[in-house]
Amino acid sequence: MTIRPPFLPLLLLLALLNLSACAVRQEEELPAPAPERSAADIMTEDIRDLLEAREIAIDHCKKADNNICREPCHRDSDAMQALTANEPPRKKTVKTAKNSSKKITVRGRCQPQCLIYARCRSGFMSCRLGNTTSLSWWPCARAQGLTSQVPLAGSVMLLGKQASARMRVGHAVYVEEVCALKDGRFLLRVSHANYDRRCSLDLDAKVLYDPRTRTADFLTGAWKKLARSLKALGFVTG
Image 1 (cartoon, rainbow, N blue to C red):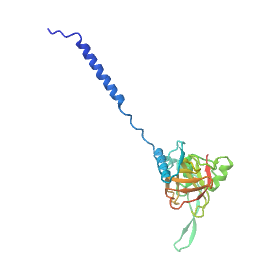
Image 2: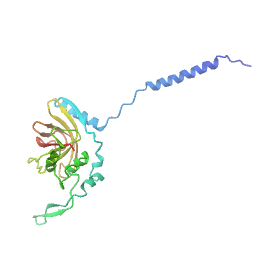
Image 3: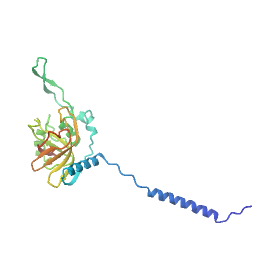
Image 4: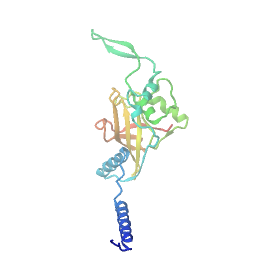
């Protein structure tokens, strides 16, 4: 009969405990996965790169935080349909076969229009005065104390009538992000609709805004080559 040493089971137990402890230490030493960067974080980096290329010093940035994302505001969304359901008919001038003009009544219009898109993105429903334009929204919102001359993330920038840009009723632009610059100006990341009168979207365009002259220059996006020194009425905040 074989007699096992009394300390052999104890040695086996200690060996097992040691292996288990090593396994735990190895798990603890694994590097933590890098956090995923959001689209908004990437946009902020793009803004910083743009400023550094122009040798403009940035002070701080703030992104919109209203929990309203882009997807519900696309052309055929329920939110867009709800905003345009009661839009009245309008007159449209068309060319006839005999090369003359006549006005016809059409139902609705292409969507999203700039103001409808800005309302959808911001959630602002102030001053819905029938077929409201940017020019009519501004004095109404100002009378209610819902405006600012300083850009705020999540606000709506209203541009005034621009003869050079054939902008007769102004234009509404949703402000995604605001970066304050050390020279007193602001760099904005904006999204807007119907910049081409075909209700197309222009997302994340960079705009340099000067509150002293109340002018906006589009540095990127669809209006990059033509939108300079656009007169801004201000920013609707609610």
